[in-house]
Amino acid sequence: MSQPWFSRYAWGVLVWNVLVALWGAYVRATGSGAGCGAHWPTCNGEVIPRSPGVETLIEFTHRATSGLAFLSVLLLAFLAFRLWPKGHPVRLGAGLAFFFMITESLVGASLVLFGWVADNVSAERAVVQMVHLANTYFLLASLVLTAWWASGGAPLRLRGQGAVGVALLLGLLALLFLGMSGAVTALGDLLFPVRNTLEALERSLTPGEHFLVRLRVLHPLIAVSVGLYVVFAGYLVAHLRPSSHTRRFAHALAYLYGVQLLAGLVNVWLKAPVWMQILHLFLAYAVWLFFVLLVAAALDRGARRVELGEGTEAGVHRGTGGATWKDYLALTKPRVISLLLFTTLFAMLIAARGWPGTGLFLAVALGGYMMAGAANAINMVVDRDIDARMRRTAKRPTVTQRISSRDALLFAFGLALLAFLLLWWGANLLTATLALMGLIWYVLVYTLYLKRRTWHNIVIGGAAGAFPPLVGWAAVTGELSLFAWYLFALIFFWTPVHFWALALMIQDDYKAVGVPMLPVVLGERVTVMQIALYALLTALISLMPLLLGELGLVYLFFSLTLNALLILKSLALYRQPERRTAVSLYKYSMLYLALLFVAMAVDRVL
Image (cartoon, rainbow, N blue to C red):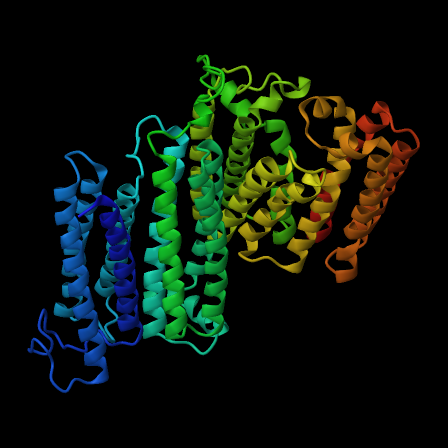
């Protein structure tokens, strides 16, 4: 038997096991798990049931196909140890696959023997269901790695991976956690069906309801937050471990997860029909397998580690050591964060119409700072090459090499993880998810994709700075009202006014490093015209809450005054596009936004 033949066989075994796992989900979704009674491995006491009913036929078919899957994995392991030399990773993958196939069989048997099937609503069934899902994930991961290595994939290099290793490990754990929460949700859909989404939400918030009902509402938010992280990790890893494989897998993850989230919405809308549950699970398996392949490609022993300067001038990212807490604080860009944090906290005051509570206020303040700081630290690593050639950024710790790129990334991932957990614990999951969305938008959309490609970078990418008020609002209310989205829109349209004024001041730096900011691409005249236009739009949007009846006369007075000054300073810049007027508008734009939020908070209290 040739090794190419073995490779095709390994991929075939993977496909067969995916189909068997999906059929197992069909057994659960149709309530056919008790089709063979409490007997295992026989079916109702018979090796082959005679005159079986529909449920018995479904369950027996699952057992038969599972038996074939067991034999296929056993043969895979046998052939792997016969065809591949000692120490080859194919042996490891096939051995792990056989081990997890044994545990898969034992878990499946326990479900039958202990009666954790059909209408059983015990906590034990929910736990075993999660274990079953986790074991299936491990089995499929072992099979796909076996096929990957048999197809020519190199062994993994686990040491020296730094933040990339941490990012991938977090992604695997997050997807595993999401899958387990999905298993519990699917069980709840089966045992406690609802007529519509509103009923599901109401029952999940009702004290005294079964735990499967109350946990069901968390799964969509977990899916969104995990999906955001998986896509973020995929593209960041593809940037730090560049290859055709990592880029291909990162793109596949982004597309697949988009389809998966859409399928989840349709699943909820259709009240979880069986066929939709199977499709949803198939997409979950696909996302998991592609992420495992991304891990294999990124940790390939031949992969270039960008953050360590491999493939570039020696030692460029390694750092000189001796960094202090002040250097790590500088990584977070405290001056940049100050206004973001201000809008977050004042959004809390606006939403609460007063003081939201000291504990919540401090949790959001610290968590918000940490998440924004993590985004800024990653930005410093990605933009290290252009920061070194710009006067404004030449003293950043990643440029001076007081902190290596590897340590900066580890610091950033640690901050982001702690921030997410703190915001979830101190506020709610929606708050943590929105903060993570802000980080991902800043790093992926702005820094990695738009910044060096188009002058629209700050218009689209600047939306990252509009997430903080959503975070503050969600922390207090647990939802996003129309007023919260108004705050988002206000900052979104304010950002070009603020940033393009800065860009006019330092346009020579941007031109020198080839960053296509608006003044560099289209010139000063177009820039000041755009600033004036966005200043007018910002002023108009700032009046919308008055039309909605959310704010009153106090806000009206302050907003008219602040907007008049904003428009006047924008017009002054239009008439005299020079550094003096640009500096004046830049500084005032920060004061404008801060005072506008203060005016809203005061008006809501009064």
